[in-house]
Image 1 (cartoon, rainbow, N blue to C red):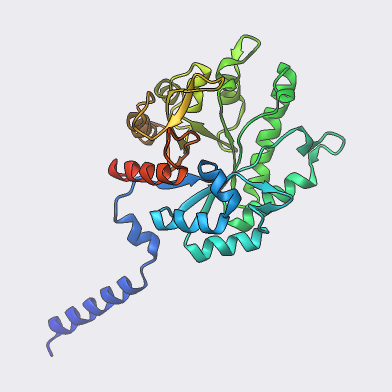
Image 2: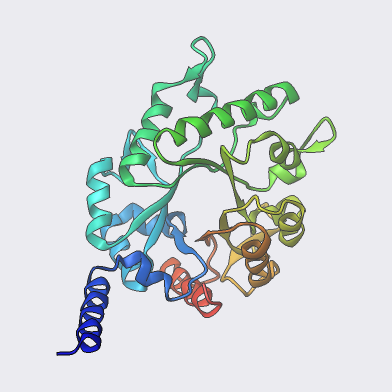
Length: 303
């Protein structure tokens, strides 16, 4: 055997061996996906309440690989302990990328200048699930009535960023509508938050649908704050058929949000890496039908 042939065989064997042990992440990266797609389980809240295991199986069968929870009560996720729920997810090939748990006034102890044990447990349990984000999905009225109180909670949010960082995670805040239609000192709450929260410590999970009920437009907000939205709630809106809100959520791409343009822009200038689908109103379809259709839409857009 000559040297050239021997070298060729050795090189080929090395390449085959490398391919055999190549991590799934590297293989997946070759598919040119733009980021992580997840489903906010609040979208199927009734199903999760009745049969969490069966519902998660359906989610996995649809092709979802990542989920975001919206149920953490008495240190349990949908009735499961953190370790139990982690096993449920692992067995189904699902990953808990993020979770929604409201951080309220009761989670900060002024006398100790520290977080309550209950909030520390929240962060601990999120780490057990392997979350990347611990997200507070709203803000109590008492936290936003006075400017000084509001600014104090912005400082606490930054401290929560440090707390989460110690466990290899990030703290985040998820908007609804009031951040855009409520003001303190003649400034929108959202604008105060964006200049007060340290972007290295607090991730803003922009819900591109919720803000319409606050009078904002998603494209304008993404343009106003480039680089600030690594974690996006992907949602579309139509005129509401009932209730107090002007708009309600619908299938992505079928409403007023211009969802594809928004998420493309957020990907380009907003730093978006995680796209979490959420739909809360269904226009006669089942929640499961809606989240399956939403995933197909996202994939058809190259995500």
